Length: 203
Ligand code: ZN
Image (cartoon, rainbow, N blue to C red; front, top):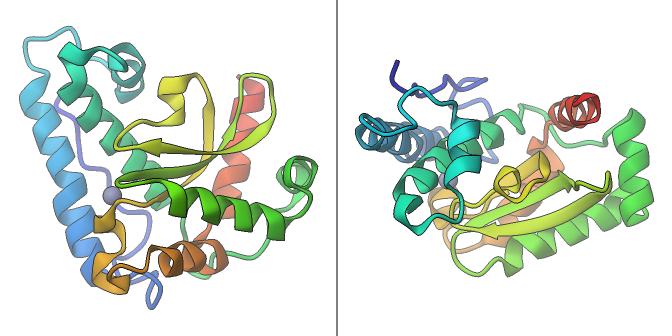
């Protein structure tokens, strides 16, 4: 069974005006799909032919000989995770245990947002900003380059923002900060992050 391009969890225009249908046409329709198509050309005849994306990501990270497979598998996973971490009329504040853990780790939601934005802006070149649960059970903000993700590093991802230029250039040109601010204020799906925290705790 080849890898599939997962459906978007909302219509391509559902996040306007913060993220346009035109951005989804390229970012989801071209970039994300290209990672799927490329992985499907790379895995036949390898040990990964019937593996899950998760197993491929964990099994190929750091192996220079398998960097193409890692990059494409991780970028499929990262983008699907990013789409699901946003929703129409998102933003607002987390509730429940996630809210408590954010306050414990960062002081308050405003400080979390400032630190997340700083991580997103200081990721030099292409990459991702993340809210993760570490192996020690703490919330942390991290940033990764290119396709690297928390799963490859033994952490659980709760939320991410794509800071590749292709994520914001059509809507914001070079203004990465404006896209990250819109993500935090209007797009974040805190229920998705809370579900990821629950499943990490159950694991
Ligand atoms: Zn992207």
